[in-house]
Image 1: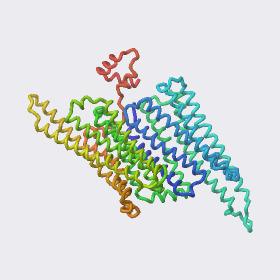
Image 2: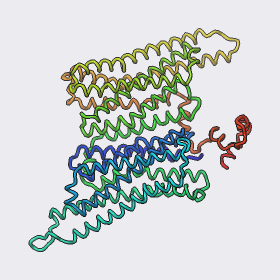
Image 3: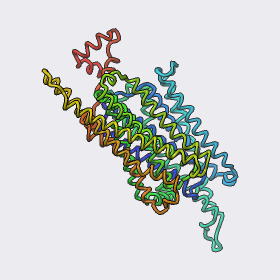
Image 4: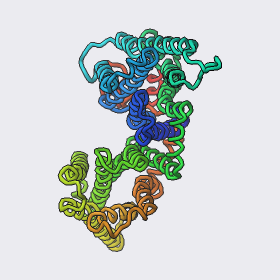
Length: 613
């Protein structure tokens, strides 16, 4: 129940951004520099994709577990555990495959050069498939998910042997063989100059020296991986066989787990630094990419988006006062903005750096941009309608249940997904953006996703202000002054909420105006807009578009006192409170539910005493 929130939150978010940014650079470098498209680098890029998934999925889920008081539902834990194991096994199997590939390249160079590309693809695919198969077994160890009597000791032992010990042994012997063969071949001096001196510039000598340098780089990466993962596997084995050997203090044990998890996640962020330090070609490509100042701004923007919207989601789940219909929609909107920081922005960095203007990746990037825009404006429109219903039809609003809100949110996401999915279909049907399908789709997108909702939100918010003002001015004088003040205060609060939503909607309309303007012009009058001369405007419009996802949490915190207090509490809290649900789990089994609730209501100190025991 003790989590060092203050010490873990900020470093975890920074590490997430570093993992996403660093591994995106590795993939982008491989894409734009043909000299880097070697067999070994293909394995390293696949490893970078695995590390990128750690930063985009595993780390956010871990941060969610840190911030939220409740550790989440059983399915959430199952997904998190499965993906955590999957990323670890994918990394170590990639490194094992690289060690085998390096040994073949050094010991049998002619055979290595004759190997088809299918061999490389088969090894990469096998690493992913085996990792996925073994990771799927982790869910079966959770009895709440599958009613299978798995022994945790057996699973921990199998994972340690198959997922760590055997691959580590293979890598050790492979690299020992690589260095032994390379040293013996270099000492043979097969080429000499006429004067009897060794010709260090001979092709074979340069080949072995280059292969040895690559082997040293990969061996260093492997050593870092083993060093970062040894604590994790050690604690796992101790927890399975000798749990009492671990620290008995709950606070110390939580610190131990937090450090172990942080160290093994750190490995995904260190690898790109090793590539840059050891390989001059990768380093030059990195510097070329990083020479653009916009990258620094994009990384900072990613950090702000992920941090701000994570706190919005965490505040909703940790503060019961925020569990209202309006905040339910705003949290769904925050999830949409969070996806922008984790998916859209990294994709835009990659697309802009590599110049990938065509192909499936670019199509997915544009579709995801449309999805985020549609989801955002539909959420804002729905919130405005919900606020109008609350102030003008209070009895109807009171009758709404959580099920109604859930159905509406699902409809929003489904509608946004359908609209975004139309774009890939247009790309398949026509390669010319000036054809009639685009001329129909673009105005439809402009009206449904921008003009129509903007007009509707404006009309609804004006109606809210008018109704609130009329009710406040015409409020009858009541005998109970306290009741009258309460109604007046509630109406003012409703009007303040509507003003906040108006401000958020205005920010959205301003931020996305350039996006819809450029999209419309590019379809109907492409020659009217010299894109090659206005690259600065296009860059500014993309920054403005993505900045909207970072500004929303700041607006919520500035305008809403309760949300601001929750933000501060999440930032400053270093100790988890024990929830009633957790306390009920440790109550005596022979105590009824009524006795439990009565006991904890009358004597709350017993809850904490029993929990610590």
